[in-house]
Amino acid sequence: ATCGILYELVVGTLSSYLLGNSALHISLTIGGFMTAMGVGSWLARFVTGDALVAFVGVELAIALVGGTSAAWLYAAFTYTPAYHSAMAAVVLAIGILVGLEIPLVTRILGGERRLTAADLKDTVAGVLAVDYLGALVAAVAFPLLLLPILGVLRTSFAAGAINLGVVVLCLWAFRQPLG
Image (cartoon, rainbow, N blue to C red):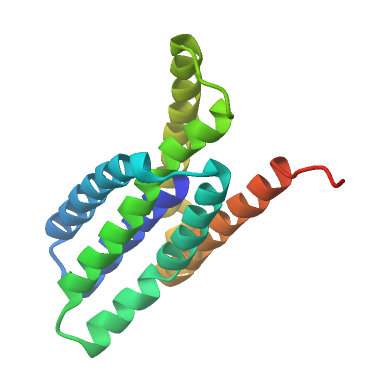
């Protein structure tokens, strides 16, 4: 959630800077992102195979799309008349990918075994608690630290780097012993 919120704030802020009407752009960003997250969560049911491999792929895609989102939107504003279409594509792509994360993390934490109702309740509660805490950290850090120090473009890149860090941590935490 930390990076997801950062990407939303980057897109909404950049759109407001470039086109004005912050209420419109923040609303479109949040509404589109939340809808896309729902689509991503629904699509997670069709992800088969190793959940960790799928999660790493999703994180890499989020790092690429989200980390370069501000650059793409600057380019769309500069070189095309289709800024809102580009904005919608970025919001939907990131939102769908972020929506895939929690179902995949829940599967990873559940392991290969079938979770009991109590185990599932505890796993989902723990995942959501950490997710929402990360959202709070991002919501406070963006206007108070990241935007004033890094600006929109570098904040986007920094969030992408955080997603890449998640990939590295997952690969390290779930590494298999050799031999």
